[in-house]
Image (tube, helix red, strand yellow):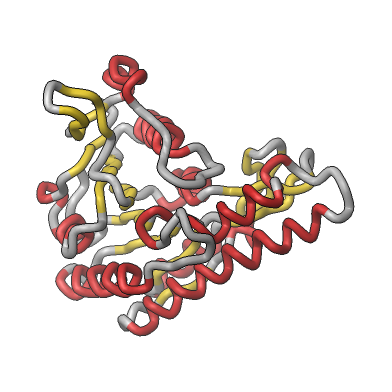
Length: 272
């Protein structure tokens, strides 16, 4: 683990945490404001820390995408209306997060994936990372999230926050990635019911594969299993990287995670 003032952390605020995924376009504003305050408090204690924050779309983008089925691509001219509708829904939630960060005194710079990315077959093939790099250079917090992007094969696709992190991994070289959601971590069946797996590696993942399920509510980007598989690929690409999956429901959990990873109660993912 690479500690110190130069530490770089990607943070994802999960859609299940910051929205009610069972009620369309319902943001949990108090939770968003609390998380922003926790980030501010952590940065006051660790002013040399560099963070990038992304957020899921929850009941905003996911609900609109499930209704319009834009994630399947564009097959008719009228599908572009659905593309614009999903973009609007994602932007609405993004604005809630931007306002909360601003109110907390956090200098966030909004960088939507639709403005910097292009995909082919659902996979990013072009990603302009300079704005993210420049933001860190001048002390700003890049703020991004799940979004629609143009796709050379499908016409359009949806890029998850994890896919954005994936595109930035080699460019920004994070030391840690925090996936902050509603659940306590990666769960597996144990003698006392569902239990959090404290530590996972790519090798260990094969042993618990059958125990990993999907997410509650609507999640068109694959739920917990997809997030976990992405995290395992990250540590394979950078064996020094740590990825944590934990719950942000408990007040102070995110602040503690930014202060000291040893205080995180969740699942730690490493290469070995």
